[in-house]
Image 1 (cartoon, helix red, strand yellow):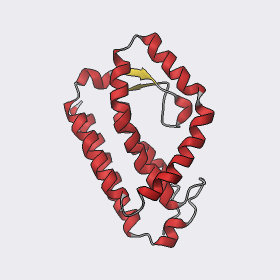
Image 2 (cartoon, helix red, strand yellow):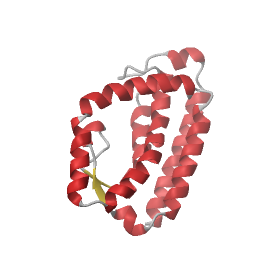
Image 3 (cartoon, helix red, strand yellow):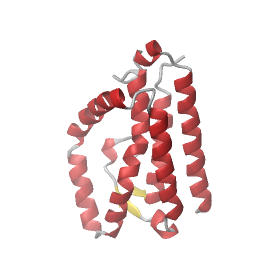
Length: 172
């Protein structure tokens, strides 16, 4: 499991370096340009990529709570989340549009660094058995959510999300 922790940490470092590269090579006009395959500008999409980490930081305590719940509770909670998919997608889109005005190109690198540091500090304290425990997930919310995900999968998720969206940037 230490190898899993190191792979996760390495992917986080890779994402931080990629974000720094994207931001250092971008001017205001390229950040304002539309990304490819989304309705977001490049700057909004970059924030959304950082937001994936912010979501995981908030999800980890919830996953810990759900791990302790009976299976029917986890399934019911997941069903409720899946039923809200039609609302989730517009909120996800508009939230990233609005939040990118606060965590813009000048602030998102710092936000990513702090968020990753907090997640990695928590990962270092995780019990190996907990990292292997699974919970039901709302797979209709994201292509990288699966019907059942281990806590280790949740820790690995933001880097998959980041890499997917990095391909949609239209930066020079």
